[in-house]
Length: 192
Image 1 (cartoon, one colour):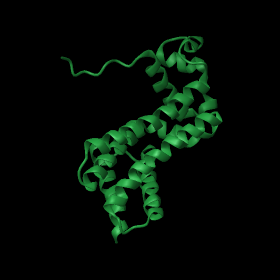
Image 2 (spheres, rainbow, N blue to C red; image 1 turned 180 degrees about the vertical axis):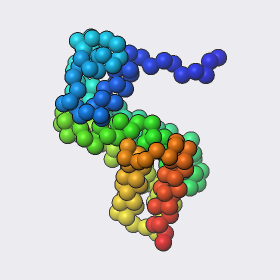
Image 3 (cartoon, rainbow, N blue to C red; image 1 turned 45 degrees about the vertical axis):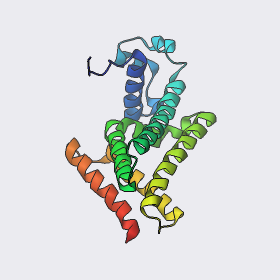
């Protein structure tokens, strides 16, 4: 049995390149011809996979919100035990996202308002559910702290972790370790 990951589908290749290009030059600064050229097909060939750039943007931003929520739920279930273990697992998962999907962080920051209203509402709904996973775990760890303060702390840690597109290169391992210490330190400050 092979442990090698399957090669990305053409659709996944298109989304990956679209995310990279949109993050680098903005949604309106990239044409379908450029996205097509980046994956070796004609711009019009993209329309066999997507209705247009708007559909790509929606799939990217809704998709990452779905993956974060699904991954968070999986981590909560897998790390069942002490709140410390669950929180560590959530932090590790979000660090992986923040280091592996920096283009999507940039894209979300810059282009969320370009989504159709229904897609934007879906992204926000998924994000709220993801936040609630974290709030529940942090409240279990710090029952003496009010919900509003915990919620602010969760959002502050997301801001810290999602700052990766703006960080100087330390190397992946060093960055992971630093982000892990900073995130745990921020949550530890709730007890101070």
